[in-house]
Image (cartoon, rainbow over all chains, first blue to last red; front, side, top):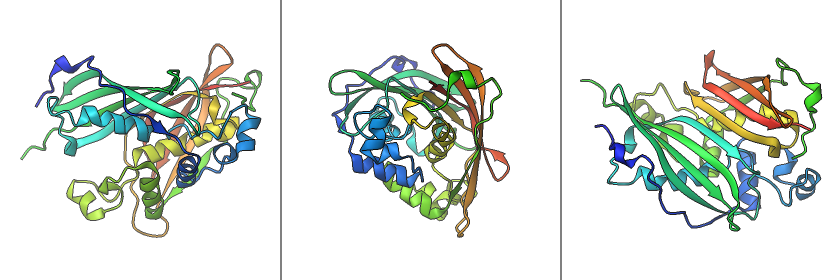
Length: 150
Length: 142
């Protein structure tokens, strides 16, 4: 079923802050096998001019995707999440996410399309720190596949 | 932002050191925990095959995290990455054995931009298939 075009441009309220912890960054870096010291060693991070350890570039997805749940689960939109696959993902950084950040996400529906029976939705998540400064924007394209023909 | 690579030292076509990243079922369980993505298609083959997949597949975001390592290992400071985007074209299929799958990533400088920035185009392959499309990063060099 085609999604309602009137949802294009709709923004959802900013999420409660997510506090980025050093150990959560370490856990993520270990999980992706990345031994860059800037993720785990404060002195290494400082040598590159960062005030605290930073997170790998894709770390923030867990935060923006949780925020996008407001869109995905919006009963008025009616997206069939059981059929959703991740199409595209993009990030644009003002600065890297770092330990101690308290990040809030504002999600906006950028586009809604139907192609060959698939529903396609583009969600933009603007991530700000607790001072209101922009940290990163995440664009997520979700594709809800058409039910298979009998 | 303190990249160890100098803008003046790279040309369009400069190749980055390639990376080869193994992924087993244990890797996926660990990534599920770290990322909070517990979708069973990434750890339960019964579920995965019931929804039409050939086997358990890696998280797309895991593959995305591995591919950018070719860039961050090259520049030294991951904070030098200003943009990064991918299209998920094919899944990385991860069999239930001790070898799992391999994600092989290459990258080269595709454009020199303003402000000492370059665009790097990445290619990620697994089992002979291109698993990411339009995989591009913009990086600030020194």
